[in-house]
Amino acid sequence: MDIETTNVLEQRLIDELSGFGIACSPEQASSLVHHLLLVIEKNKVVNLTRITDPSEAVTLHLVDSLLPMASDLVEMDEKTRYVDMGTGAGFPGLPLAIMTGAHGLLIDSVGKKIAAVEEFASALRCAQVEARHTRVEDLPRELFGTFDYVFARAVAQSNVLIEYAAPLLKKSGFLVLEKARPTDEELSAAERAAAICGLAFVSRETYELPQGLGHRELLFYQKTTKPRIKLPRKAGMAKKEPLGM
Image (cartoon, rainbow, N blue to C red; front, top):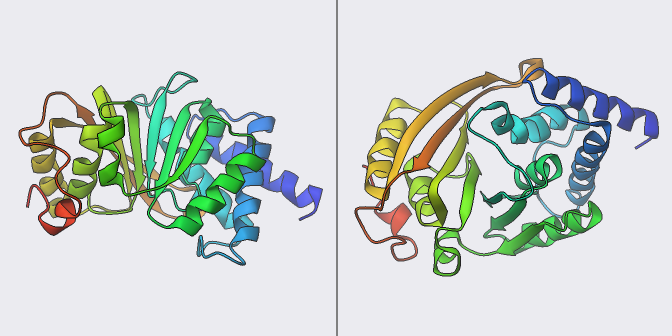
């Protein structure tokens, strides 16, 4: 892609983020768009995304990944530790690292995706990012109560994600779920699951993506107390017998 087109994408990203009150420097925009172009190129050999038009991808991958930074509940810096559950092509984990300098653990159950994310992190010089091929249920045995934030973009039902996140979060840490249009049933089940897992529902924030590209809702759950049951449960139980139903 030529420099002029890349510059247009970078400026569009800066402008769109500015609309949400998110300040993005030219250097950050350059790294973010670099990530996007690496994903689009890699997608020719590894299935990472169905969104391959760079202009749309600026909004649907980069701006979408960074929407949590529009919330007052998200304060991240070099001391922050977070998990990106189901990172796929590195969204939102790599953009959050680029924008904040925070330490991210990006996980996915698909090895080829993690291999690609490792390549991207290396090319972007994001040394504070670790990509790991693992199941989220296996992490708490090693990293119980370690993280300030857990992020997930539409990778499973909210009540399942709450159960996954609870044992990973520090006291007062936040689970941030990004959804399109969650149903009342999903939200009710999530609130019941949160109560069982020691989390409290804190906020529901709604956003409209630029260019009419979609409606987004951010759901925030904060770890407030110990869970009522022993977590994590055995692998597979969260989906087989989901809490809050």
